[in-house]
Image 1 (cartoon, rainbow, N blue to C red):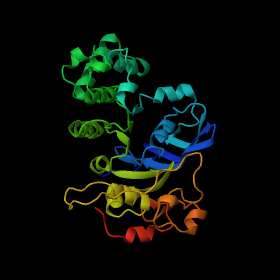
Image 2 (image 1 turned 135 degrees about the vertical axis):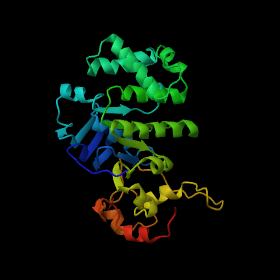
Image 3 (image 1 turned 120 degrees about the horizontal axis):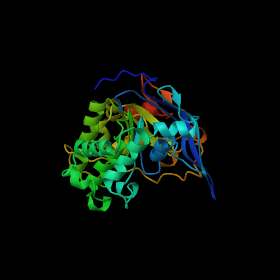
Length: 334
């Protein structure tokens, strides 16, 4: 799908930073996050657990509470979400921008029927009467492919399978036909057949509603089959971004290369999977210089002293690595 960027009609994130005050010091969960999402575009945020992906989505929606603090600039259709009054922001949440949270069994209210949870969004953002809300909830259940929708409106989350709960979460998010969907690991813990159905559903709804999507995942296969562009996060920062085709064909950051190398490939001879040595750093005690240097085979004294800036290496392609040319020159891994 070809997308013409128009920042005034899409999402623009600049310098988004989220910190938490803890007993061990300040944890920098997300730092200087920059990316754009054009109308109708799917952008993937990729990285290990704890890299800052979910915090970034919650910060965009301003769902971070004390002891967390969010700063920076988030513009949606020409309006600044970070500085917006709470009442005005509540009118945008759920109507223009919606979010699918991780793990629907904990995100859904266990003591309310699923139909009532869909209708809550309609009560908050529409003027529909009770009968119209019921009809809209039934329509949404059918759109997301939940069988026997009329009966299941009265059922509770524990009566749904994992895939059906995820579909119910999508129905709630889509209740008011949002123009931006923030999807936080929407296929986690689902088997591959249900995962494929959910992703196809999101793409179909993207096309049907002209909706933009920011998709958080650690699954590079999901990114390859779903996203137009991607941003790779490590230790709270974006270390590489570009189109999915460019990044997969020639990763320019050692961490991106490591992630791609750890994915099994069906056409390759049976070999040991590549792994990245070490573990992600503590967010309260990040290494000096490049946060990835303790795990990086390319690291030099320069990497240990200074943090590489996220710099452009072509139109729309950005990388934060002093040795990106050496990484790019390595043999292709896909």
